[in-house]
Image (cartoon, rainbow, N blue to C red; front, side):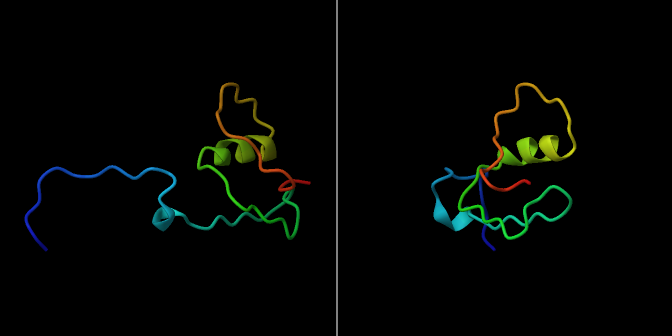
Length: 68
């Protein structure tokens, strides 16, 4: 530990060390689907499609081949 000043609130999305996995399972999800890369905003699009919610204006998209 050392004294600090200020803080950080994240990194640019192209910084590889912050990339992580995404696991999704359940009705409507295609078994064995692989998502090579997605944006965190895509989660809203995926969830709204699975729950059949009308969410105009969301910025994400459903990755191709993910859902049945």
